[in-house]
Image (cartoon, rainbow, N blue to C red; front, top):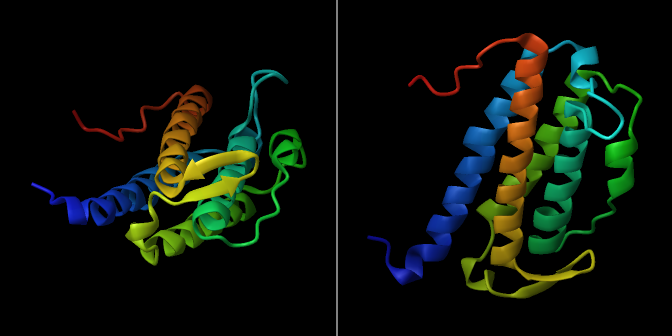
Length: 164
């Protein structure tokens, strides 16, 4: 049983584990399975490519965790995350994405859990640090599902994330 005074540390540890130990390797695995063109493939212009989703997740984690929770300066161009069509090579894209995730993990590793209920202004939203962190983890999970689905469509493979 977790004592109340340990809840913040346990929650931060849970979120760090989800982001760094579950989501990170799964997205790397998906990108490794694909050619550069497949990373930027989209069903049509109303849908996102894996490349766009990775840029979007990088911007999101930098804005909400590094900027919001960590109070670091953040300049995000959200529209560009979705409009990018330059087909950034997957190795460069992975570097951008992994760097954002590692920077966020560093913020969380050093975060004072007594500040979880502090209000922060993130973009145009008022949110507690707890809300911001929960938003990022949930947001990552949603887009991870899209990335896995696109990878399965392109490769016609079971990625075997679970051996049930």
